[in-house]
Image (cartoon, rainbow, N blue to C red):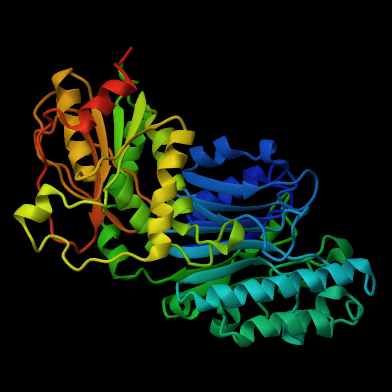
Length: 486
């Protein structure tokens, strides 16, 4: 997994250079800084055409940060550093991509110093240090990537006295950067290149690029879990020499895939081909019905995202945020005519519990997860989608009822679940699948008459828990409620 950080210094002005670099180096994730563009000016379409999903926080003329992810959408976990009621400057964004939490940060320059700008720089970095401590303590792979506007040591700047009073080299700035490293973070580039300068920035002034009068201020700091996977790191310095280049060059790290991701790697080429075919496929006359196993994706989001994601009152929000990203991504990608989300209920045993006493016996859920599961149907309803939840039923029952009912009327269903469903005969069409932040495996039985978007964790044994027939279950009523195809 190749992760890069690049201060692009005006994304629209340097868009051609950025796209060319993406095409030739193919990083999996890119943290961008200094977009210098409002949210509405961000070149989302051009990046999507290049194969990158994006999350960004723009700002007109100044600042601005973004995270790009190849062949998937970043799941945003934070759009500003904690510690300030209102953060007027767009300097921080954080997202999960393929099981790794990645930041794009753009620390204040701080010049001139001393003065209010330098004070703001130090206060901002204090907030960063506090948040970094929380992220490190989460025990998950994290990459703190971005333009720190700090030269850590004299080895990270060309021999000169001209920067002696610059905010980038002051003891206070360096001390705060070192404080983050002392938490356990690994400076990837300096670890693998202890002697080389590895500059990432050359000012436009005073002929500094031709003279190689550079500074190293763009850094990728790795948590212990990410550092274990570090393979290589470097700087694409040749990018700085191109016509109309940014004054920064991209810095990058290569992380070894974990075991789950390695088992998925063989599918990447096929996935790209399927995506291309899907984009060029004709739009069906009747849009599909999308039915989702709500508990499945809420559980996965809760366990995949850091517990430091909070909402008002300090209450956990990881399941809410992750599920919302899943739901809205499905809707945007598949463009269904209607959406039905099925939910499990815990207040009464189902027929599965009665017929198979060992079914989920002894299974317990965190109170924080249960509280978020209670809230999620309200979010679904607020989006204008339908919920299916009834005492004694599980989400699978509603998914099976939806497939059966839609098949009878000759429609098409997209099923998003971690379990397999009973096969359904009908008109055969190409299967489609999307990938979230976790390693996922697609399952599609032959002869299926509906588009299946069925997921389960890699390594989990295949098999069905069994489904109830459609009958007169609440699921059928919900199918009728969401309406017929126009």
